[in-house]
Length: 162
Image 1 (cartoon, rainbow, N blue to C red):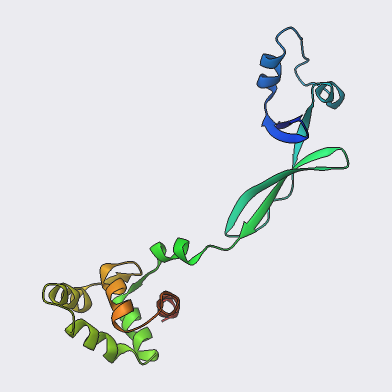
Image 2 (cartoon, rainbow, N blue to C red):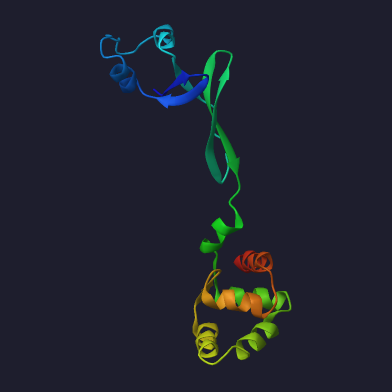
């Protein structure tokens, strides 16, 4: 069971062991009643139902009708959280670029890279099995063909369907 202690109107997570340590001269029953706990400013902490979402975070502890509740908030993943997991095959990448009329731009952008970078990019482009959204190749091509991060994200989402 989880508890909350209220001090100066501020709820703080609290344990039954802390209650016993803070009051060493008191003999508490194994499962103290709500009224015994309340005498020490301690209350049972109820859990709001957790929302169904990609990311669930604890919110503030709230008092409602004399009971204390742990709240939760939810949100979708941010682009920065999603990007590391975006991986498509080179076939999917090429088909997505072709679909968006960008395949020739990528070939030209690779050819325009400086020596050393160009050779590495050509090897990855020609012989790689897959491309990661945050790979050096994808990052270099993003700016080389004038796409925004969001546009490249959209290309990866499209590629995953191909």
